[in-house]
Amino acid sequence: MTTAVTVTDRSALASALRDLKLSGMLATLAARLAQAAAGELGHLDFLQVLCQDEISRRQSMSLHKRIRAARFETETTLEGFDFSASPKLPAAQIRDLAALRWLASGESVILYGPVGVGKSHIAQALAHLAIRAGADARFLKTSRALAHLAGGHADRTWERRLRELTRPAVLILDDFAMREFTPLQADDLYELITERAGKSLILTSNRAPAD
Image (tube, rainbow, N blue to C red; front, side, top):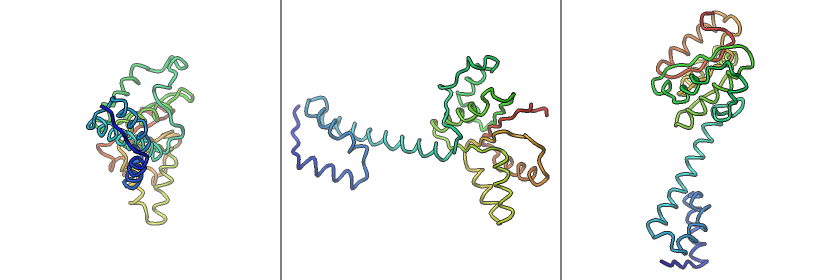
């Protein structure tokens, strides 16, 4: 099959794609036309691969948007974690967490241990996996999350701020229980955990759960 496309035809098609905000198709149009001209793509194939190009672009944009919204300290992945640098880490358990069964069942994860073993890295990497699976996530130092809620008591935006932290499927509270909570902080934390019932928390702490 041979397909001939004039410059005018191509220009009109490119203009139409821009008007329809189909930049994924526009970016690969020349390459797909070349494939069609070489007989590698039939009419339906040509349309299908152009649509897939657009779908891939939108999925990539959605992923990057959700990663930005998570506000990670650093964008880290489990694939990039060096388990050999911390041989005492329970690597098998961490890799089991990568299956995201905890996310599917709305369970929470507590990562605890001494400073420098990679707790925050692993927490953010697990949330990164959750985002890649289609979930929303948010990373916060626990102190900042509680300060954010406390500010809502002062300006009467507490309920809105609580909803903001309740919304993501995964909420990371980093450096949890570094110091004793005030009564107000304890109340806010109770409300946050209660409102997030059925959604996952990831807590990192230098203290064991028994403390």
